[in-house]
Structures are given as structure tokens and as C-alpha cells.
Amino acid sequence: MFENLSDRLSQTLKNITGKGRLTEDNIKETLREVRMALLEADVALPVIKEFINNVKTKSLGIEVSKSLNPGQAFLKIVNAELVSAMGEANESLNLATQKPAVIMMAGLQGAGKTTSVGKLAKYLKEREKKKVLVVSADVYRPAAIKQLETLAEDIGVEFFPSNVEQKPVDIANGAIAHGKLQFFDVVILDTAGRLHVDSDMMDEIKDLHAAVNPIETLFVVDAMTGQDAANTAKAFNEALPLTGVILTKADGDARGGAALSIRNITGKPIKFIGTGEKTDALEPFHPDRIASRILGMGDILSLIEEVEQKVDKDKAMKLAKKVQKGKGFDLEDFRDQLAQMRNMGGMMSLMGKLPGMSQLPDNVKDKVNDKQFVQMEAIINSMTPKERARPDLIKGSRKKRIAMGSGTQVQDINRLLKQFTQMQKMMKKVSGKGGMSKMMRGMKGMMPPGGGFGGPGGPGGMFGR
Image (cartoon, rainbow, N blue to C red; front, top):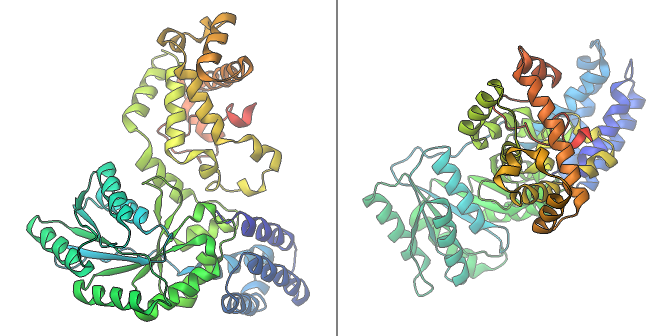
């Protein structure tokens, strides 16, 4: 996410932050580079112009000239302006209304509306502890109704049935009535994708909005369309009173133009950002954290929140007790750690949130391949319980059998066993007196306790080969 913009800005700002003093010339030169980086990121021109003017005004003012470290003061100004462009702070959903609170989703075809309905339902159910009902008013696409029904079943929320013979307004009113009778907290209404230039379809969604009067009207837009995302959101906002935006497919957007343009052009906040295909790949949009990621300074707060939500605490506690009692760390434990890493979006997702990772050489980044985690799990799954408990048993003929069973080569088995041995050594250090605190100090306090990082990304893991 934002790789291209992050790389360009990090390099440009690195050149100026080391300078002992800032002059009008070197600020002008740096801002020229920043402007080019924003243009390449497909940020809307009015946003770029305002951004550059604000940074220039503040950089040449008293804030920087009186600073002990002008370069860092300049970086701070750039960071503050990025945050300002994206909306200052996260704006959460407003559900303070008579139950059920109705959330209506709108957007273009293919933007990811139906998937976002499922993700948002899961988010509200698990994080906000809400009783959620989902319903599809997309009478033009039977597959969309079926897709939402399947999603609802997968995430464990109730689906209100509908079909293509019904009118969208009738479907919505029926769902809301059901929501009231069954004491649902939230009803999420999926609508058909439509183009803002299609007047008939736009009239239909206006009528639907007027009929249900939702507390939240969210525009779902594909981040990969760049500044076009902001322009489309603006057009929809002129037809509907939008309350916010969900930016989807941000994991595939290396530019970042949409994230930086939407707030400025529409005046509406980005409330959520979709970061993958899984139903839990939806994050509240925090402008300060995103700005930090763009500038290569990481996003530790989001990382800690992710660990809190996705790490199996019971397993982590059992492993910690097992290691402390000196019972060792076996391949079963190693597989659990790999699964937890995968559950958190894989190593690439975690790396994007760690400070300084954008500065890693490409040859190191290339070694961090999430596909390897899947392969490693497959290898361990091909072992017998006895082999997982006692890896020293795995010799020649066993290695061949495991390789055949997992569709890998013997050298892959050897590599996994080597990584496991390094991990085992680290875990032994942890079990000694003061071991955990020593390890945590060694990691500069960046790994939250609980076992979430005790996989191949840790010391002696993928980077320790």
C-alpha cells in the first residue's frame, strides 16, 4: 500500500532532513520533488497545489528557522499536512439513533460493495458487539444477493432474503421492519452498482435513500482508480448526502492518490480502508497512521491493535508456560506461529507497519515471501505427530516422504528445519532467567508480548538465514 509514493517521499525527505540549515533554495528543490511524487501517485491537482503551498509557507516561516533540527522540523510539517489532507482523525460510524441504525452502501459496479458489506458486518459484530442484519437491494444482479447470503453465513450474521422480483424500496423497508421486531442494532443495506451519469439509476437510489433515511450513507470506491475515485465520490455526493467513504482494494494501490484526494475534493471522511480479500481485512481509516506509513515511519498502533484482535491468546499463554517449564518448542508450535502470522495478513502486511521497512534493500524484501509460509505449513502438515514432536528423527528417507507429501523438495525440508532450529534456540533463551526481557530489549520493544511475532519474521527467522 502506497509503496511508490512512500519510496519517492522517503528518499526525497531523507536528503533534506540531514541538512544543518534550510534555505529557500533547498526547500524549493525538495518541494519540486514532492510535487512530482504526488503527481505520480495520481493525487488530484487542487490537492497537490494546496499541499505544496501549505508546506512552503510553514517551512519558510518561524517554525523551521528557530528549530534545533530544521530537517526534522520540515519532515514534521510534511507529516502534518499529509494528515490534514486526509482528514485529521478517524471519524467513526454514527450509530446513535433509534434501533436499528441503517447503513446504506452506494458505489460503482465492481468497487467491492457487497464484500465491504460483509467486512463491515463482521467488524461491527466483533469489534462493536452489535447485532447485525444484512440485506441486498441489488435486484439487477441475482449473484449479488447470493454472494451476500454466503458472506453472512460465513461471518455469522443474519441475512434478510430478497429476490429480483421485488422493488428495492420494498426490500429495504421489509428488512428494517424485521430489524425492529428482532431488536437488531444495525441493518446494512447493499445497493446495486450504478454510474453517476445514469439518471434513472441515480433517481432510484435517491428514492431508496428518501424511503429508508439511513443514519450513514457510505460510498464504496476502488482505491486503484486514483483521483478518479475522488471525482466519482464527488458526483455521488451531489446526488446523495454521503456521510463517509470506504476505500477498497488499498492493498493493491501502490500510488495512494485516492486516499490523499477524497477528503479534499468531497469534504467527506474516509471511514474505513479495505486491505485485502478476507472478511477481516477492513481497518478504520486513521489519517495520522496512514501518513506515518507513507513517510516510512511505520504504524505501530495499528500493528498492536491487530495483534490484540488476531493473536490466539490462549495458545500464546500455553506456549509461554510450556517454554518456561523447559518443555521445549516443537514443530507443532512452529506451525501455530506460522498460522498466526498468516492470520495477521502475512509478513508483507506486517512489514508495511514497521518503521524503517521501506528502507530495506530489495534483495531482503524479495526473501520475505508469504508463499513460503504456506509451503512451510504444508511441509509440517506432511509430518507425523511423532516427527513434529521430535524433529531430530527426520533423516534421509523421512525427508523424501515429507517432500513428496507436501509437493516440495528435500532442500525445502532442510531449510525449514534450519529455520526451526534457529527459532528453537531463541525460545530457549526466552525460557532462561530474564530471557523474555532480554529478548524484548533486543527487539527494541517493538514486538508486543503474546507470541504474535514469534514466527519466521522474528530474530533467527526469515531474516536470519
